[in-house]
Length: 633
Ligand code: ADP
Ligand code: MG
Picture (cartoon, rainbow, N blue to C red):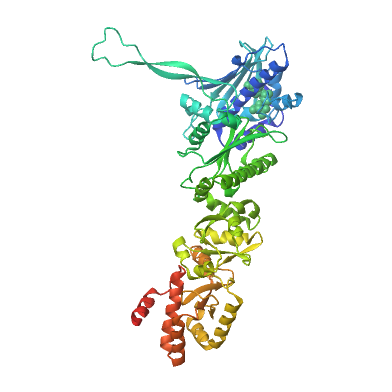
């Protein structure tokens, strides 16, 4: 018995128990090694005339024996000599593949797309096996050897007999216990499923004997009551599909093929809205196939939704949903990234710090942004639908970016234009701005209909300025976080800060304010903490009174935030604006002149509540409000 080299016993333990959280990947690791071994031989045959192997001789095979409780993975690859068995399997973290890569210059060819390079994958077999036996015969050698180990103390290497070149690995599974079921792997469907899941795109055929059923021929003397008889038989089948669709050029794949792949792999029944295929070579080589779904999954905005792209290393699945490959605002994108620059044995923690992965993520993000910009410019209808589905994610991105993402995401957002009566981009809004307009006006609220009829919106649009109607909770937060677009500030039309009145109008309002100071003060007194001020509006609106706000918090923000944990602390500073040209104002003046305090209070309360209602805000005391109206009637 030879002991494992290095501090291997401890290392082996650590490895088996911590690098892999998911023990079923042992099969993926063994198949990847087999694929590497086949690749190496194929590469040799291309570069060395004396090596003669046909491509059809190259295969990987998976088999199992229920009674003996074994799983066998074999290949017709390059094989290993006794020395190589010692070197590659006796030393943990020694990767023969890494060496092979270093010894050969692959810059001109992709013939050897070696997966392994870390040197621990093989040992993952000890997560499920109590004994592992590796029989191998190197290509061109007459002698075979067998390496055997229980994964604990050490291993033995003995001479053996084996027919052709290649390697055969037999795992004797651990005994099942109440908690751990190892026998589940002794099942055709399970193994087939694992091959499909993890190794579907390995470039050599993975064969397995599968059981099928067929009808027996009807006997000649069968009577009328003959029932068809069936028999089971076994047949060799190639389990993997081999050529990954993402490695193929976009021009060689039909839209239907992409759609089929998308729907079957990502469990959607709607065709994707867009398919993006990327093939990068050079310092960083990878292939990516990305899909913008045709509809939003029902759970997209729930806590359970997990963003991410499937991550492959040379056709072998590393991770189903690698979140680091997508920014949050593109959380709806589905797809695959495959890079030969990434190692298989990479844990979630190390992935995050992986610079190649980050570089790929950046490229992927740019590709998505480009595609969306293209869609907006060339296919407005598609883009409108896309934005209905996923615009929220983009607005959240702008909000979370606090200005940092304006350049990238700003061109993608759309809001409803009051004047054009459709969704417009910010650039489209700016293009139609009158010369004297210095801000982008918007009105937040819960429906387009209601916002359109808001007195202040009417006033602003009558003056020729467009107003963006924002009906999603995130909208105002998004615009506030962006602060400006093309140097124009965003202004909520329901705040005191907006300035659409002419100098004359402002002057008139100011004078009316001074002339009626007592009235305004009296009303302010009546409303007390509800408002911070009562003023004359410089904008002659149709309504007798409107509510605006001073300060950073708008009424809409207050409404949205009142559903959250900070509800009590968040309060919009309300300003009641009166229309001095309205008849109602005369009535107020008269009540004040008569010294009728009760009447003034009634009118003031009514006006305030009415203004709240038109803004879409709840009134504090609906019962009193109703009583007050009855009193008037
Ligand atoms: P890695 O694949 O990352 O190099 P592994 O632990 O999976 O590390 O394998 C260690 C080494 O053992 C491989 O690099 C390779 O040289 C050798 N090896 C493993 N399986 C086979 C096989 N089926 N045929 C030939 N060599 C193999
Ligand atoms: Mg490996």
